Each structure stands twice: as structure tokens, then as C-alpha cells.
Image (cartoon, rainbow, N blue to C red):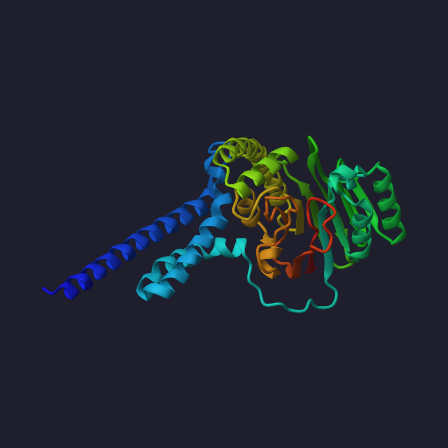
Length: 361
């Protein structure tokens, strides 16, 4: 055999080996992606670490999409691995990254706003511009407004309340939650529960023909301090392995403890929803969980997520450095259509962005 033929065979052999290694890596990432999807069925109280696997979903999704590009450039026949992997978990992919053709909302839709206003703090060190928050809320022209981390008795809270009152809103608050509505209340105390700075409340409103049960929630916060977030972000930026391990361990412990409490809160709210399953329901708020989580999965088993139905993209709603996540959600009962779900990033005055949607009763 000639030297040229030997080199050619060697090159073909190395290419087959390289493709086989890539295929093996691709299969592994697909299996990991499926496992992460299945983690939403795990109860965080029983499986605290595994229940956090959903946070890896965007990374594994990106890797599998990257494999599609690699196979297009190298060997078309292997593209089936990623395509089959993505199709089999397409429901979760669309929960995370919604794809909808824009359509105009019909006349008579109800405009909904949910917004964690971070107490509209007046401390400059918090980087919170409370005046911009208030201007956005009153300028949103929303029919139903659900606020979390709302400081009702603060100077800015009183100012916002007065402005809403002058604009014809009826308001009802519980703890650090507020529901303001242009639609009249028919029941202002359907459900109230506070838990250490978080909580839930519900009111019924009517448009004259239909009644809507509005549930505003702020589920258990992760209580990751600003310093801990900064350490974690810095470790990622500088690729500091030692700092990444230490800060990552702290962040994970915070996430696990909070997820266990959110499970209890989620289960309780789901019980309340089932008790009122014959009604039209709007559930919204800061849920502190991504679309690939126990919380989201439980709520979506009973209701429709408006971002999934009428949004576009990942819907990042948290405005904190180093944690680009979608944790503010709006759900509706299955007989309600939604339009134009969006995250408004024009106002970055809180550590959350406002989320808006139009719904048709």
C-alpha cells in the first residue's frame, strides 16, 4: 500500500473516530436534557439537589442546538440525534422559549400587569428609582395590577395609592401584596396568607358579564444576598474555580431551602385553585421559579401560561446581575385566551421587570 493510501485511510479513520466521539457526546447531552425535564416532577422537599436541575436547562438546550449546527457543517446523518432529542422535550423547550406569531388583541380585552416593585425603596444604595416605578404603573393603563414587595405605608406607597384612586382604581392589599383593578371587586377577601415577607391574596372582579378570580402571589424568595450574587457573577466572569465552588455552594444551599418552602406554598395554592376550578382564574406574581421547575409544572397542570401562549423568547424578568431568569409569571384558566404577553425592559428601576398581557374573558 502506498504512503498516500495509508495517509488517506488514517485520515478517514481519525474522522470516523472524531464523529463517533461527537455522536457520543451528543447522545449524552440529549439524555441529560431529558433528565432535567423530568426533574420538574420531583418534590424539592424530598429531592432538594435534583429538583434544582432545571437551572441547567438553558445550558443543555444551547449545547444541543449547537450540535445541530455542528452536524449541518460536518455530517448530516447524525443530526437526527439532536433533532429527536429536542422534539421529544419540545413541550419544555416551548415553556422556556416561547414562539408565537404576533396577533392583534380583540376589542374588550383586559390588560394585566404584574410587577415586583422591590418596596419602591428610597435608599439610593438599592439603585431603585421609585418615581419611575410609579410613573410606569400609572402609565401602563392596565385594568388589573398585581404588585409584590409593595410597601403600602411608605411615602411612595401612599403616593401610588392616591394616584391609583384618582384614576378610578379600586385597591386591596394584604401584607406586601396589592391588587388594583378598574373592574369592580365582588369579593375582596377570597384568600389571604402571608409567610415571612412573601404571601398570596385573591379577589374576585367582574366586567359585568363574567367574574374573574384574581390570585396575586409572591412565593418564597431565595434570599441570596447582593454580595453572594456579586461573588457568583465575579467567579463566572473571571473563571475563578475556587470562588465559583465556594459561592456556588452557598447559592445552591439557598436555592434548595427556598424550593422546599415554595413546594408547600405551591401545593396550597393549587388546592385553592382546584376548589374554585369552575371559575375563571388569573394567577400572577413573582414565583421565584423558572419554567423548568416543580412550581411552574404544578401550576401549568391546572392553568395555561400566558407567556407560553402569546409571548416570544425566554421572557427574562429578573433584573439582577448574573441571574438572567424568567420567574415572574401570569397564568389563566384554560377557557381564557391571552394576547401580546411581554416583558417591559424600558423600566429597570426594580430588580424585576414588569410583565404584561392582555386576556379575553
